[in-house]
Length: 409
Image 1 (cartoon, rainbow, N blue to C red):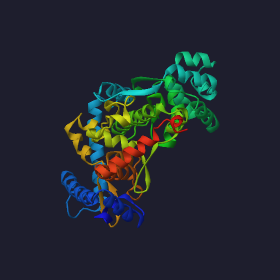
Image 2: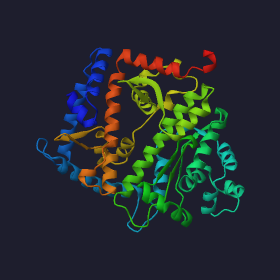
Image 3: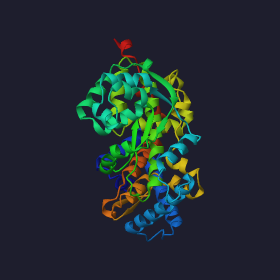
Image 4: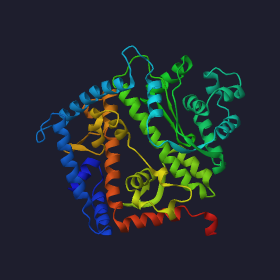
């Protein structure tokens, strides 16, 4: 069973097997790896049956093509949910409205607009200003939301400009932040069409996430319709909102530290990791957040309060949010960490992997499996975190990380 997980994850051996053995010993031998392998196998067989495939004789390419066809059909379902007709070209605005109406947790700890614009005035994005049609920084700051200026700067400004902005982040303090709802913006005019075209074509997606700003920007898509765009944009925007909330809780938790600005700069640049470890690897905050969201009884007031409340750790997977919109989409809510092995090769049943494969018309040999592997790894680690001894160890490691350095002097 450990071999199956190892191959599904693409893990390095013998390190993976030895690490699991250590976790088993530390957790009191719960056989979490064996149980998870069995559950994955059983769930994959159910999914194959739902796709109309043979549970015992389906090849990787057969499953891959069936998933692409499912994505094509479900894209039509999402278009109908959004109220899009063939001639409509306002997909982003409809996704924005949908996300605004969804009854999901939206509160975040985000940089105040005044603070964000203060940084922009100190470090003016001149190329972005020109592309947006402004002659002065003051005029741009007056008329544009901070998140859209940051979005334009992401596309136009040099790496040097971005490094300078991150350096400015290090001077920020918790007082520069406020509690508000996640902002989802969908700019729609000819300037943004021109600004976004090359960038979207290059990076193969149209979602910009500004975790420190508590904002998501949905960039205009090319004029030529992309197959699967409705499903892809809706799903990726939901993921982005989750990413903002996850980092928001991390920043709230670390506001007690005197080096808060440094923590902020790192979190804005890349995914934050904690000092807590399992299998000899540092645990990403995303995994810790998922664990407490799924296991609310593990919430420790001594660790999180007064700054982080249980509602800050709430998290609803994007696949589940989609499933709640239409029964047809429930299939994907059960496949996030599922994969089939075919002669040692993993085929992902994860919706995000499938959508990216479909939209980009990737052949079987170039298929994406990243999101499935990420979910499977997190699922395995969370199974071990349920063991009291390991959960307590992680709590202690997190507690030490959050101690105000001044108290240690």
